[in-house]
Image (cartoon, rainbow, N blue to C red; front, side, top):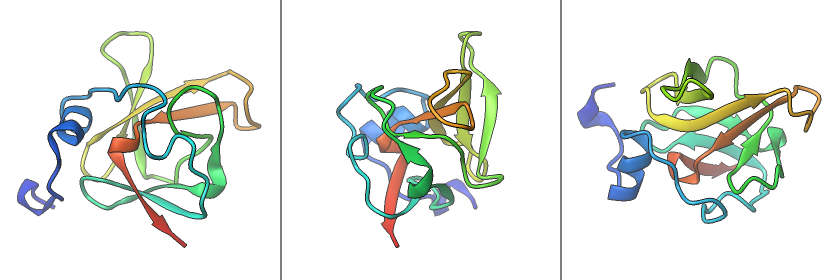
Length: 122
């Protein structure tokens, strides 16, 4: 998929997805959202996360304890402290993943920007 084939992005979406920005906590449309379906990459429509894997981590961003297999890449964040999560299809920035917090049996929390995703109901 070439760049011209990607979905058009608003300036806010571009800031998060292309410039690795972060939306303000507790402001995203999917933070307190629990309908059944699949979350897609807002830039390329690749399936990323299932609603069955979403949980309320009280962190201000949508949280998932696992991704759809092979849907995301995990990379060392430039800050040296965190692990960045990006769409494995287009490389768009999604958020960060944290390990060892004990919230779920997988012991992982994918903290994802709502602006990086689009929800598709089942």
